[in-house]
Length: 374
Picture (cartoon, rainbow, N blue to C red):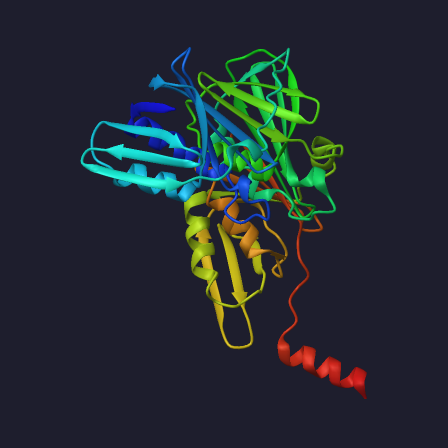
């Protein structure tokens, strides 16, 4: 096997494959990128898998002799990054040894046994739909998926393609994110995409990439020109997110600038460890407060308040709200019901956050524990 190929093109492909290949695994052959050459077509295939996600890319090259080599990702990316010249040559004249040459430099490296690589079987769906904007969609949803291994459906992002629009939902039981974007395709499709896998696909894509997506058996497959990416489905049915939102009746309403709220939350995040943030709507302001036994902080954000909350306000996870305001922009509408369930709305997003219990000061907690002990 001898391959002469554009260095930057194969480097870009190797970096994508390296993201998928696991860095720590008991099965050593999984920690490799499979490079295959086809002498008849002049094609080079680069494949990686971790059993949850798989990727294959096809590259054009000058090929002499069909063959395969399994190279560790870090080693392959490192060599291609350091070599000079527009083209590099990969040749395998000895079993499980590859020579990589570029400019005046040459590497000779040992490979993993390619015959043991669990090469994915690529199922191709009969029916597909066009899907783009992967990066933006993942950024605004994946942060809200559950990490609970016992709730696999909530580890996913629910995707509905319908009427030239994409409706995505993510929920972990305490928060819910809905995103609605325009789509170029009238195709209808419902998909449940594991959050980790969607994030992985987003990390090797751009928003302008247009995929054909469909599902076959236990796999959801994304295809684009010379790239195929598949992700394993997780079991379970997704919750009815629209029914949840319909049961929330706003009692307190305000509108404010998301950048100001983001800045305030970042400043308050250093005030106390593991403590929630208090939010109140009063006068012409959103008031955020946070504190502990040794520090207290408050931030006042100008807002258009239609109906004020009680002075005591409501308590929320500051980490959840920080993550939210890192991904949304523009003017937001805050709607709270009588129990403090909060909706944050923009033109294309609706976010729900459940309130938390009011924190108990450490001194008070110690007194209560002492009384119980007595």
